[in-house]
Length: 246
DNA sequence: AAGACACTCAACCGCACCTGG
DNA sequence: TCCAGGTGCGGTTGAGTGTCT
Image (spheres, protein in one colour):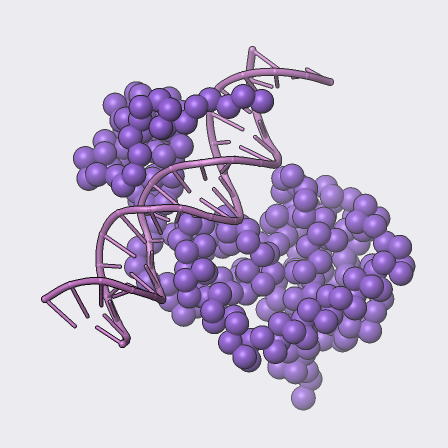
C-alpha cells in the first residue's frame, strides 16, 4: 500500500512548536473540534501535517492534561500496570487521568525502569519469571491452545456483560481462572480472602479486562495476557500473606 | 570556565489497524 | 472482497538542559 507522503515531502514545518502555532491549534480545536486531523492544519492555517497537530494536541495542548511531576502513587501505578500489561502505554495512560502515553513512556524509560531493576525488585522478578517458565511448560504438556481458552464458560459477549459494574471482579476472575488452571498456585488463590481480589482488580489493575472485553484487535486472549495472570499469581503469594485469615 | 557526559522530554517515524467506498 | 485514506500506537531520536570533572 502506498502511503501519502508526510510533512517533509510536502514542504511542511517540523520540529518544536511555537507559541503562535499552539494558539492557532487551540483556537481551531476549541471552535471546530478535531473530526479530521488530516484536513485540520490546512483549515486552521498551520504549516504542519495532521499527525503532528494530533500529537501536539493530545500530548501537550489538551485542557485536561495534568502537568508537573508524577506523584508516588502514579509512579507505583505505572510500575504495577507495566508489570501486568507490558509496553501498552496507551492502556496504561487510560488508567491515569491527565497523563499521556508519551509522558508515561518517558517516565518509565527515565526513572521507573531503573527502579524495577533494583535488587529487591529483581529478586521478585526472577521468581516471577520462574513461574512463567513453569506454567508455560505445564501448559504445553496439557496441549492447551489459546483458542481453547474461554472466559470461564462464558462467551465473549457474556463475559463483557459480566464485566459490568454490577458484577464484582472476584466473580469474574474466579470463573475464569478456576475453569482453566487447576494448579496448586491457583488453588492457593482460591483460598485467598475476597479482599484479595478486590485489591488485584481494583481500579488500578482492571485495565487488563478493558483490553480483553473491547475485543479490539483481540490480541489479548487470556493466553496472550498470561503475563498478567502470572503477575496475579505472584502477587497472590505476596498478598495472601497480607489477607490470610488471622 | 569550559568541555564532556548524562538526563529529560517533545516530537518524529513507521507500522498496524480501522473504516468507508 | 479489495483498496486507499485516516488514525492510533510504540519505538526512537535529538535538542535543550543539568551535572560532573
